[in-house]
Amino acid sequence: MTTSTPVSIVTGAGSGIGAACARLLAARGHAVVLVGRGFDKLEAVRASMEEPTRHLSMAADVADSGLAHEVVDRTLEAYGRLDALVLNAGVAPKATIDQTTEEVLEQAFFVNAFGPAFMVTRAWPAFRRQRSGRVVFVSTLGTTDPFPGFFAYAASKSAVDSFARSIRAEGKAIGVKAFAVNPGCVETEILRRNFPEKVIPREKALPPEAVAEVIVACACGDRDADNGNAIVVASP
Image 1 (spheres, rainbow, N blue to C red):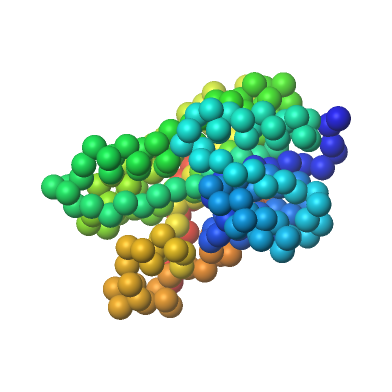
Image 2: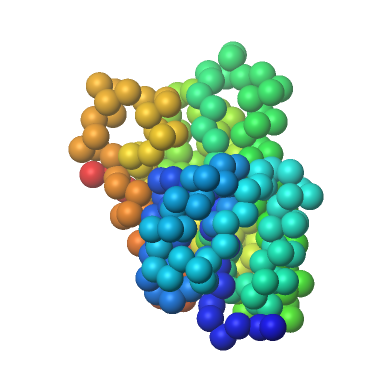
C-alpha cells in the first residue's frame, strides 16, 4: 500500500548530523527510515522523534551493495514510495599521503562514495516511476580545502559532489534533483576522533542541527534552485 506521507531514508542516522536530519524530517511530516550499523542507537533516535511508530530503523552497512539495496527495497515494500535519500553515513580516516594504505583507501571510498552510489542506483527506478525524488549527499568543505591527512577522505567526498552534478543532468527528464552539502567542522564523534578540542575548539565547530537544517531544506524542496550544486555551510 502506498502512503500519502513523504518518505525519506537517512543513512548514518544513529548520531550527529544523521540523527538531527531524522528528527527534523519527522517534524516536517516525513516517514523516516533510519539506517546505520547500530540498531540500538537507531532505535534511541527513533524514540525521540515525532510519531515514532511512523518510522523504521534498519541496521545495515550501506558500503555493502547487497545491504544498501535491501534498505531501498524494504523501504519501498513498507511505504510504496521513496521521496528523498539523505546520504550521510561516512568515515574520515586521517592519514598523510605516505601513511595512506590500500585499506585506508578502500574504507574511505566504499563508505563515502560507493555506499551512496549503491543507494542512488537502486532507488533510481522508483524515482523514474514517480517522476520525482531528491538526493542529498553530505559532503565536506574538505573537497576544496582539505586538512592535511585527508588525502583519501577528501577525494572520496569529491565523488559525491560529482554524483550531484550527474543527477542534475540525468534527473532533469524525470524530476529528480540532487544536492551536496559541504559543511566545515561539525561537532560530531568523527570530528573528535581526529581533532581534540585544543586543535579545533568547540566554539569553532558547527552544531549538527545547523547542517541538518540545510540538508532537510534540500530534501523537502526548499532549495531546488541549488540542484546539482555543492552548498557550503561554513564553520563559525
